[in-house]
Length: 108
Image (cartoon, rainbow, N blue to C red; front, side):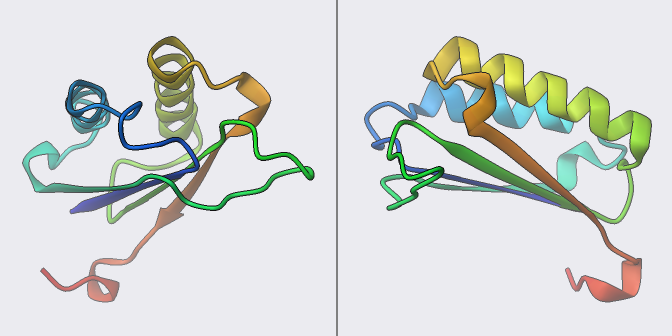
């Protein structure tokens, strides 16, 4: 099971349903239990990074499997490429956190 949380200061009008669908498919295809991915998107968040309120995205991917050094590089590149292309957020304002859970740490 995996959980993807995206928090951004972009308005919901920019983070379209099409982007959400593309993001979900991109992450799910690289996870072993792709049909068990839960995704949450929070827009209009008052995020400030480096004293700037320019567009910023913070992703947090938590999973019981499908994460590791090599896997995270793939997820990170995919997330970064999609975010730059579809949302126009610059590279240094896209952050991704990865958290590997033991199966007993997640109830489903």
